[in-house]
Image 1 (cartoon, rainbow, N blue to C red):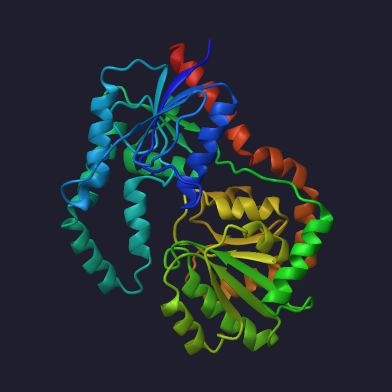
Image 2: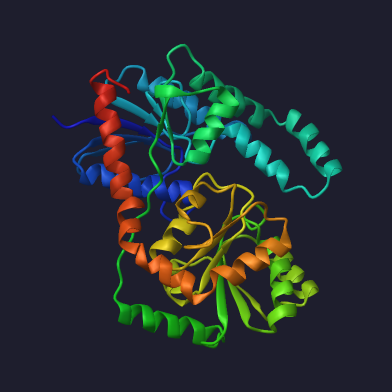
Length: 390
């Protein structure tokens, strides 16, 4: 008998940030696997086979509390409906499964503090957080959900998120299930990769003997674009114009363009805005630079590895768990150590690193697939429906 699942996610989009894109892909895989899904969301989507959409309106009242109104309305709508499983990505108290795709609320707060460059700035931010009513309410809601007498099964998309749950909420045992993140991967012929590489590098003036370092982010501040530009200055001092970077994202780029100019690397750093053709840029790149302050498990690192591009990222990224440090990419301790970042990019851009990544490609395709992620999630659904959570 087909499972009937309620999926609760405030936003479902294939063109927004990583969590929303992952939810969109996950939803499609659920349908492909024959699961009947009732989706509770603010996003306006068309119903289709095995999918019913319940649009939750949260207009009226302060926008600050939009997520809280969404969660409350979802709880009300779910009170009289029968499902095998209620799977909440946006926290709601009706959940049998809670999957914080963006990581836990307290970890998100802590890591956003880490961006502040001075202890005084961090102290002021902590004071501001104390008066942030939305943040306090979200902290309270998530704690109420995961610490109730019979908590939901909390699905961690990385070991990093599992540690967050243990640290902030003292969760352990069968309350947490690690189901590692996944992405959709479309294989591409060697000829098409070659054509994409030539076209992108010609468009942006990158010679074949230069190293193209790709950065992709929708939040330049959180994902470490400023430290990367500082590291690029170090690389220029050592290697001249050997390293260039293309930076993709929808963040307002002017402050970062000005920063590149002040650092003397404006001719090496190209800001290209958002794009739906990221695979073409992956084919053109020699290394992915993602010195993030916080990522529960970034899709961009997983996608880069599947495209054969060695990544550089930080220990504050769950996706680092699939990198063999120094072999298939590089992991640094902090985005603020500019020297470490520059040396990591030098190391990851070496041809032998790309060669070693290619050797494990087939294993990564299975390990990092959204289909695998979905099948593991459906197995959890069945155990919950049967009354056997562990």
